[in-house]
Length: 111
Length: 117
Image (cartoon, rainbow over all chains, first blue to last red):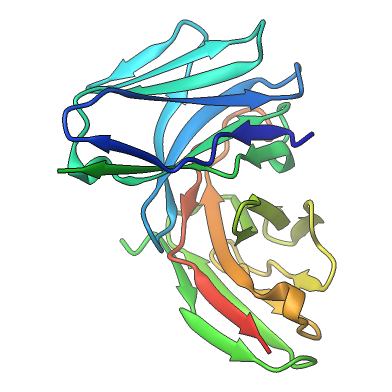
């Protein structure tokens, strides 16, 4: 089993739709969680960190469920510019080399 | 402020050739790392450095060497290129918190697309 798993998609949604991505991780000792965004043929960029209490940034909401070992990303009112691959990132422990990237979920927002 | 820069953007090698991928950052970050990205595999850590003169292996270090003589530069050397090393290579850097090895935001370079024939 991979350490971090994501549904690869692609998710094809119309503009204005709400879409949710899930990510599961296998190591219960994981401590830090992030969502990165990667546009086609570009480098990944931090979208948001994921906190235990959940957090929101505009149209984006991230949730963490430690008991079930998954994190989620909800995008409301999807825009064409949201089309990208979303990478789930988990830090297994307070060690730099333990940052694990998921394979990513592809999102296409269509007019 | 250029952030993280990588050269070259594209490279084609023949099996057995060696080459160096360059990475530089101007943010005075202590941590630098090299990843490779393959379809369906996610980003995998090759080598990383926690400061000048200090490097360590990541998940997939075989076939690669690194050095860190300055804070700014972190080159990745392919010793004898193989088709299995065809990939997109990303260099990343991040700051460090007061405690060691905090998982700070990573800033990525634009990547090097390498093909080994």
